[in-house]
Image 1: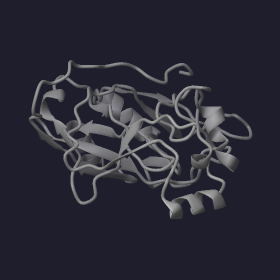
Image 2: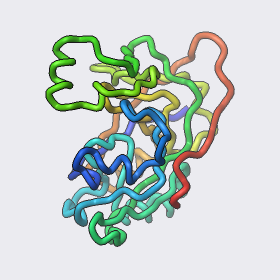
Image 3: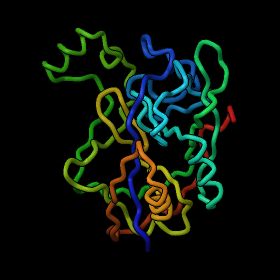
Image 4: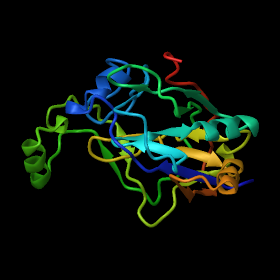
Length: 241
C-alpha cells in the first residue's frame, strides 16, 4: 500500500463576478446544493477569471473562496497525461468580461468520490443550522451574511484537524485512480468542500518537476473498526465539458 496525500493550493484572485458572491449563480447548477453552506453544489459552467494569471512561476493555482478546485499550467497537464495520471480531466476557465478562454491555465477536474472511509475520532463537526452563539450572531448580522437567512440543510461537515492528520480506512484505497475526493464534506461557517487526495505517484511527479503553488499533507491510513461500506464511485460536474 502506497502513501496518499491531501493536496491544496495557494489562492490568487477571486472567482468572477465576486460582488455578492455572484460567481455562485453563474458557475454552479441552480437549485442544487445548500445555499447557506454549499454542501452538494455542482459546477455546470467554467470558472471566470478577472484576467490571465500573472504568477508564471506557480504551476498550481487556486481561487479565494473556492478551496476544492485546482487550476494548473499547461506543463502540468502535459506531464500528467504523459505519465498516465488517472482520475482527472481538464477544461479551460474563461475571462469574465470577454468570455474568451484563458490561454495559460486549465481547471483540473477530480470526479471520483471515495466511499465513506473517513475515521472521525480526532475530528470536530458542525451542522448547517441557524447560529446560536451571540458573538457569531452579532458579526453575521453586521456583514449581512447568508448564514443568517437560510435555508439550512442540517447536514454535517467536519472541521479540518489541527495539528493532526486526516485519517481514513485503509481498505478504501484499493484500485483507485491517482486523484480522488473524500465522500465527507469539510469546512466551517458558510464554506464546505470535498478535499482532494492524490497518490504517491502524483506526489513524486510534483517533486521531480519541482512544481510550486501546492501544499501536500500525508494522510493516515488504518483499519477501520466494523464492516466497511461497499465501494461507491460516481462522476460529478461534467455537464459543461
